[in-house]
Image (cartoon, rainbow, N blue to C red; front, side, top):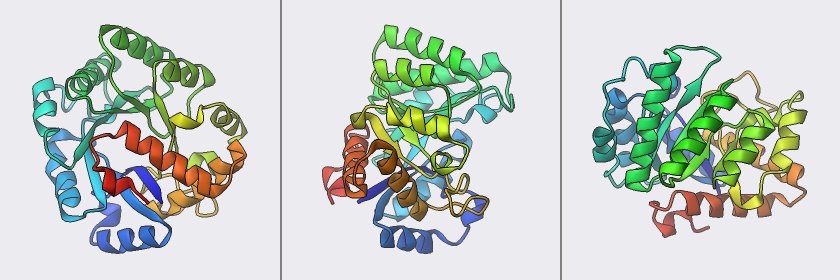
Length: 263
């Protein structure tokens, strides 16, 4: 059993295909997936998909690209929405200095609110971090000092220092199809050093399809290939990596019923 810990089933790329996507995922032993919130104002779409499918859970949050548009979303609103039984995480939220779609100070403030919601609910905050390693480290270390909260660095493609300092805080690290790309030797070297009990895998579908599908639309079934490459990187059998990442997912996303993550 493999879990796709981060995908976007509400995106237009998948319109009308949810049942077929889930069937193809099941055929690849991907039997559970998390569809991720990127705008609180559109959360109803994400929640509806999770409600309609037993294999799908969801999160609630504001992507850093949308931070300026949702700067009015309060911690209390995130906490209230997270009470839904299918909501198992907060985010995705964080910092993106590559596109800078929202002012950096606004991104940081919105991100801190998501951390506060994660701390209040006990749900993991699913973190987007791109070209912002130094500020991400500073915020995580400062906020952890105020009180612990579960951390997931999603679609990890950052530097070694962020991985090391975040895992020292208890963070989990999720790898996407980027891990399989030919020029990702440095990322594979970082993945090799992530503790086995902190590893997750994801697609970030419809983006970042792993080889040999790079450049095409990604989907949850393809996470099995990323897990296979991660197993090669760590020097373990694919079956062990599948079991390990599923067990890690169950520990981090503790709100998911145990029977849902039992092979």
